[in-house]
Image (cartoon, rainbow, N blue to C red):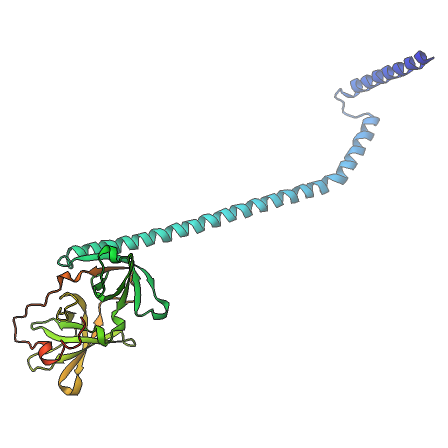
Length: 306
């Protein structure tokens, strides 16, 4: 009984396969018109595909759009990063070029204008916030041969101040903008005849140094534009360090002396590299003219610190 039913199932499967093969053989041929089963099947499948095709196409398009937007976003982010990196590199290159120009200028000034002095090149590494106009810190100290009261020059060779205090690896520099009674600078106005005086103060409003105790002598005429240098008469700073140019001249104390205003040649607000001048080269200048000495007529030797 079991074998009978098992054989019936096998016979039914074989018959079904034969019918399927016959149908396939009948439909595989190229015909101008499909059979009705094919038409029913095709129409049904076309209707179902039509229902799902457009929504599927829209979903696929939306997914593609999202992927495209994400790709554009990533590309845009990368381009911005590249642009920022380029700007950073460009700024760094410009900074290196500027520093290179300044260092070349310093080397030229040291080899030419400052060749007679023993100088120590240093970088400005800090500026005291509460005394921005007055103090700065440089990168050389006691180990480099820096000692208090040494003259300090800007990168273009103009006097900016003196060393106030020294540490092992750094030093503090007091700028000319903070001149006080104990650190006056003995100076000389250059010309056909040397005219001596003392730089005693700084006008913050006009950015000018005030040079007083200039002898009032008939034959000594001071004109704007004349250069002013250290005289070396104070016994601390070397002679011949460039300070600035005369901007104007007026009456001094009680009409017995003259007062000159000096425009500094150094820019006190843009200091990155400096020279420290070794004071071992201090030597009073030799003067072969009848110009009255400041010590004899102005009292420069009394209390003049530099």
